[in-house]
Image 1 (cartoon, rainbow, N blue to C red):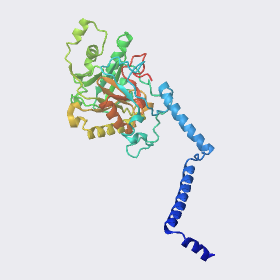
Image 2 (image 1 turned 180 degrees about the horizontal axis):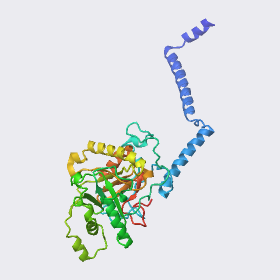
Image 3 (image 1 turned 90 degrees about the vertical axis):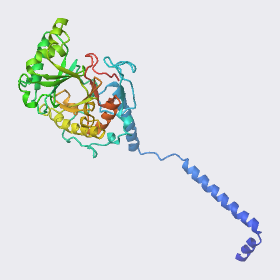
Image 4 (image 1 turned 90 degrees about the horizontal axis):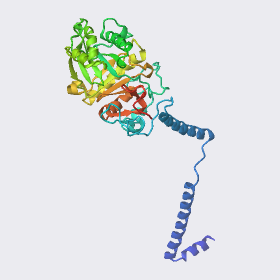
Length: 382
């Protein structure tokens, strides 16, 4: 048998033998390729019931989370893909008292610039708040700012204020508050927010206890600094700079007082609630945020030491409301007050880049505007 088979193959001409082998090899390769293609076109394996349910729930929860942001429901802040103009009823309506229109931006749109925004807490890159700090992550931030006509920021050079600054006898905030209450009883003027800050005075600190030496005051949205306001001149200061109900004769009289004023020179001002005696949450979060803001501003050469008064100062302030949403940050830029809540050190770079430099509002952190109309609790209507 072996001899017969060998003889059979030996009688095949060399050319035909090569053609025979080539044809057999080609047919085998075609069969292999067809098998491979068929397996690749077969349907993917079916997920187990539990896995399939989990995936479906994740997709559903994400859609509901994004939908709730636009409908103002109380859920955790979730990323979305919207980018809209600042408006009250439409995307093209301008701010009431703003020269420039501002836009909103979602965190999801900028995570590629700062991947830390999506990291889990606690963060290994930035400082973190203590785990026992009870911050409200459930309530909706939108519209949680009380409307005010003006924000009065008193330079005190310290941050260890009494629990209620309006009751601290002998200080400027208490004197202003008392006179403001009198005006309110007379149905005059709007609501003022009086805040202490750790900003240094132009007056020497050890002289401010004297009635004729006072504090520097920043006034928004007027965007001015009034120097050396003492407790003895509270009435004159209030009537000249804060009252809206004086007639021309009264205005001329109070404007004769010797107050030194100037425009606020800073590119922007960052205020962070750090009133520890009022609430521990802001007392802990405030200094941590202040350090992080100052660090990033210094790296970008936007701090006061780098470029003087054209820079961006960061101040701790007394109670401004909403301690449950610590860290509370107010950014004043071009006379507009943008109020953020639940700010962490991971958000600092984004706030500087997007809000201070580009003038955009970060939707997930936005609580509202300082000077909203009482019937419009926020400058945004999603």
